[in-house]
Length: 114
Image (tube, rainbow, N blue to C red; front, top):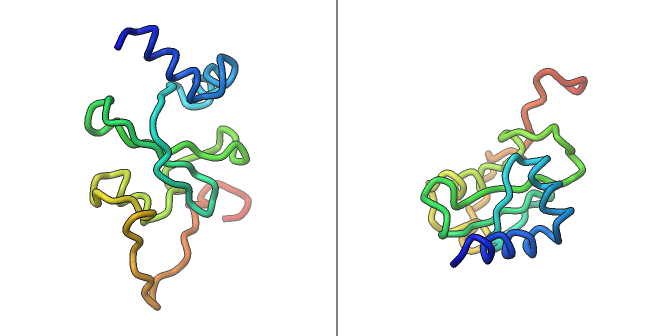
């Protein structure tokens, strides 16, 4: 696959040239991959095994959080998949709900909600 073909896939995946450069501005890189799933917070999870191990799974945060996103906004079940603790995403093999499990909340340190 040539460099131009790869760039064409990236542009199509990110909704055109404008979307590609907005993604570059927001995330400091642009990739293309298969949508694996989406959590209830609007985070989208992708995988592309063309990229090397450790960089082939990623999350794209919703536009509603703007540039103020961090890793604490990823729920535990998706963290398992992103960090290769589990091979199957929670869309294929969901975690059993335990009565002692609390709902996910992001780290609010340094915010007004703290």
